[in-house]
Length: 262
Ligand SMILES: NC(=O)c1ccc[n+]([C@@H]2O[C@H](COP(=O)([O-])OP(=O)(O)OC[C@H]3O[C@@H](n4cnc5c(N)ncnc54)[C@H](OP(=O)(O)O)[C@@H]3O)[C@@H](O)[C@H]2O)c1
Image (tube, rainbow, N blue to C red; front, side):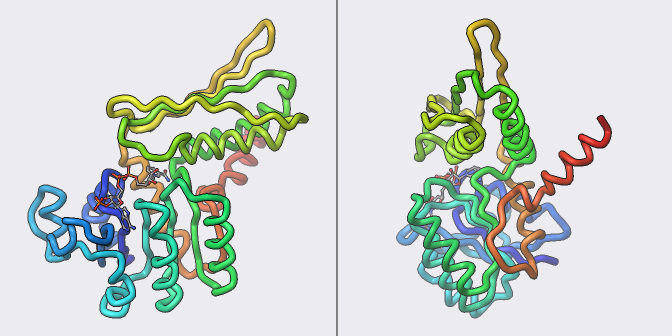
């Protein structure tokens, strides 16, 4: 069984924990919460409104101690950008790979993280969107932008009203994927909508003077995130280096197979 520590016991981290508890391939080894969080010391089962499971939430500042005392094969992180440094330092000491699903890192954060990972021979999957659909959308958009460089592009992302980062990490990634293929410097605009309980919708609208095309991805619930994160966790075991979900999901192979069928 793969022993997983989950960092961040919020909406998505809780869904990942539920998925681990229901999956015979994975076992929950530890769960970390924010420093000073009222969740620290509480049983994870109780926090998830089910029966106690004998594992209590630990403050992330105790990660090094937890790593020393518990067998942990991999960490899945759905928390906050401030968590990356303490987590990576603990992972370095105990040679544990990480799947970073948190969004909102600055460019400087990402440079520090990837340098630290490569320099210390660690294994990381950096996944600002873990779903299969978004990653196929990203690959498809590269082709669309190459084929329709003269069209105008606009991204609209809609999320629940508690989401902190605006625009979403996925919208930024989509914008950058399109931008790289267009023969002009202007950034692809992103409209962000925060309303109600939306899990996540990303729409790319492109239009010329006389026609339009739109592509939409929607996550119906957070189990899509949990499933992608567990796939990435299994992928990174025994590897070193900095990977993304394209590597995990074998997007290049999927596209090659699709092209061969045509
Ligand atoms: N990659 C993807 O596909 C994907 C999908 C969904 C979400 N996300 C990202 O994942 C992150 C979490 O999303 P969410 O919807 O689950 O948010 P959320 O419900 O606000 O949960 C965030 C959790 O992180 C905890 N936390 C904050 N700072 C921390 C720290 N320094 N160390 C440990 N835990 C810390 C918070 O603890 P308290 O509860 O104690 O405050 C909270 O439980 C966001 O960045 C979001 O954009 C990514």
